[in-house]
Image (tube, rainbow, N blue to C red; front, side, top):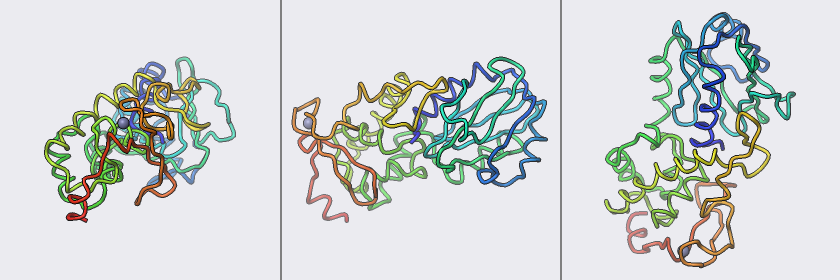
Amino acid sequence: MPELPEVETMVRGLRPAMIGSTIQKIELLDHFMIHGQTPEQISQALTNQSVLAIHRRGKWVLFEMQNGPVLVIEPRMTGGFWLINPDRPDQARLIFHTTTAPCKIWFCDTRRLGRIRLYDDLSQAQRSISMSQAEDALAITCMALAERLKKTSRTIKPVLMDQKVVSGIGNIYADEILFASRIHPEQVASSLKATEIRRIHAQIRPILERAIEAEGTSFDAGYRTVLGLEGGFLAINAMYGHGGEPCPACQTPIVKKQIRGLANRPTHYCPKCQTLPRSRNRNQS
Ligand SMILES: [Zn+2]
């Protein structure tokens, strides 16, 4: 958390407030989160720069300046942006001061797991991100996904959450995608048939787009939109947060459990709609 839909919601909220605006000052309040440069170097590179574009790649936000430099912020577990005074201003890690309203944009991060980094230009930033991130989940082809699934004997859910396989999917949306594809989360990835992989691939985009429309998922005090609102996806989703409730397709109670490779994060699935082909799994693992 946040995953692709939450970061996309942040980016869509930031764009009208920041694009075309000039950064008068940038306050870097937590040097621990800055990687690769000193706060002075970042401040010098961005002061008086106009914001040309704000991009998203997987779960990363890229602020591209008119004259080239790109500031990359990865919110990771608990990071988020605020266009209004944040609920917890003591957790502000970076503040942009800009020439147009709202004039102050905050980046807050409770657990300080996020990362801040500066690049010379967009292609350098993209190259660097590509070293740890596969294609964005909204852009990946079925062929690229199939190639990677074929090569691993891990189970499908942690593989879908592996950012080197596909970038942007985390615990919540992996459960939704696998339910919609009728694939058991513990099925070995390399045992999936081509038709099953096509089913998974076909569900990724529509599920993420529905979640973006709902402005993401807020299941605790963590994620909020840039205006401090909760995301609405938990009101319309099928699996995450619905353990023990009837499956929307067959009424069988939804199972919530820990699966191997995903410590401390619950997995939700329907034991009737998502069955495990045991012989196929045994042969492959
Ligand atoms: Zn079911």
